[in-house]
Image (cartoon, rainbow, N blue to C red; front, top):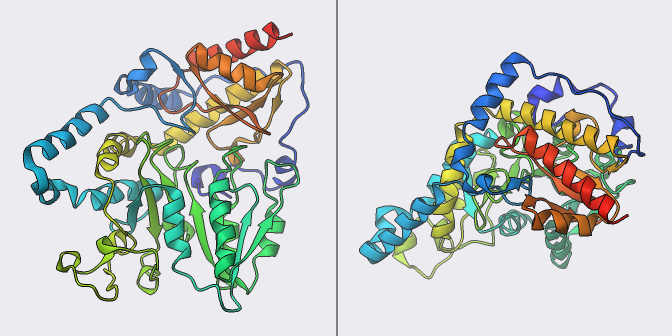
Amino acid sequence: MSLDRDDASAAPQALAGVRSQVIVEPVMSSPGRQPIAQDDAAAEAALLARRNEFPILETSTYLISNSLGAMPRGVRPALASYVQQWEELGVCAWEESWFMAAERVGNKVAPLIGAPAGSVSTHPNVTTASAVVTSCFDFTGPRNKIVCSELNFPSMLYLYGQQERLGAKLELVPSQDGLTVPLEAMLAAIDEQTQLVPISHVIFRSSYCQDVAAIVERAHSVGAHVLLDTYQSAGIMPIDVTATGVDLAVGGTLKWLCGGPGVAYLYVRPDLAPSLEPSLTGWFANQDPFAFKAASQRYRDDASWRFLNGTTVVPALAAAEPGLEIIGELDLRAVRRKSQRQTQRLVEAALGHGWKVNTPLDPAVRGGAVSLLVPHSEEVAAALLERRVMVDHRPGAGIRLSPHFYSTDDEIDRAIETIAEQVQARG
């Protein structure tokens, strides 16, 4: 099951066949759409009431939140406040609010992934946050394996591959279809020599949800640590890293959290944090940073500071807060149900046109995006952008469309119609 506990209970017991057959052959018709339940309709209406907080929705069909979330209206005054503080307070702005910005933002992320306050630090990007994690471990001994899927985001694979220079052995679990991760192969690769298991909760290319609970159980049974990448799940579905027992988690505000670039986060399990000492560190992680002593590192005890390093990116932190506040006010269970319904609408429409769907058909193992492989996919994606239908294209997957809580059914239908028009125009 995934970290989405509400969906897990509804998932079929035998998902292996579904998971291995997510590339479907074209069909000429699709099943009829089911009406929205009354309670879900009310919940969706409450979500759509927040549309006016995102200016780009007035001029665009915005279906690309899995790549870059729409900017909240509150970002402009938040950045103006940052500029004003710098302009009027100068160096005193650090004491006024800047120095505490990283902890403040980390504590706004924490409840969105089921983490306690004080357990989340912030970083410029997920690669850096993951590098902090790898720097905590010694790969020179017999427990030196890093096990992950070849479908993890490439930036992560580059990082883990370079750990081999420090004694690590990277084992990549292959995907048979290029879209899903075989659970049995993943579990088999995790053994007593494994130190770290970095997994993507939702695969970026195909929107496939991995069975996090099963991987955590296997890793812990042999003494390994699990690093969960929530970049493609936080903000679009309920997550509870505490209940699932994840050791570490990373993610960022760029996508579903509508916080823009420059802010990633790192969760460390509170009981594990005191035993980890990252070699990628800096003065913000020191117990007395303003003593400016040229001595060995003395780590702070609280994880929101212990895993920091150099000076934080204050403007990016300021820009991230409005989106985190909005997402924090939403019912993420309702967000997830709406996402599943609207991605199903996309899937059915695509199948009706005879296009390949490179995304799981089972909503229980599907994230918030749908990848469609249509004729001339890359050209069609570019044409959609020209028409202010915001999507993107990924090699091997096709056009990615990702409705969020602020997306309407009319926008989904318009996107499908525009794709069909562009495909037809190209013969």
